[in-house]
Length: 256
Image 1 (tube, one colour):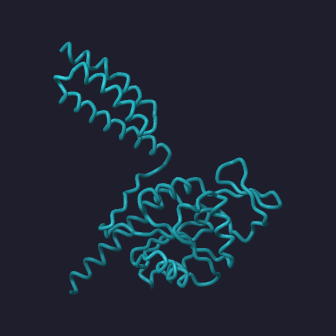
Image 2 (cartoon, rainbow, N blue to C red):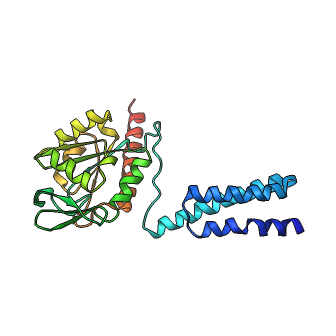
Image 3 (cartoon, rainbow, N blue to C red):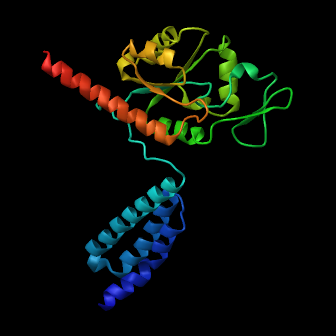
């Protein structure tokens, strides 16, 4: 009993560190230092120390999930190469999905401001991304999903400049930009990224374009142009993609 009491006293500092919301890597480093000192004192009971360490990691994971949930974020499942029920590539129509405007209204020259992910044009108008977009793009990229962007803008250099100024260009594998029907853009994007059309999840606000994409076996999601992309939309899109793949698999097995 005395040993357990001493152990509780020794591990209390790192339990406190779990509660103050430090980043995972830094916190684990601190935990390891604390546990190393405890281990030296109780080297005859290493199994108990290991149990405490594992418990600490579980508590840290729960804490991080709670913090992300408070931000309105969902956990994104990491893409595995052999998982057919997750999209390999996610493609967005850029206007009204990532930002609430059409790029044509921006008057160059364009510049960044002191506010992150904000652009100012020649006449002083300010342009921002939808609130959840920066985190979503970073999360998708870090979870091994390929990303693509489509635009009606006739100048691909404008698309590249705007995404660069918004500091999101590094998350994208490719862009396609051309007025008119987007099926040709999607076909080129698929070929450039080496991703079959049936492994792509596409978000747009234009129902006609979405219907055209469905004819190419692309899984599609319609978004309200006033709301922009959110984690809830991402979660819904993944659900639709899983259902589409499951139905296709069942249909193929019933008709060999």
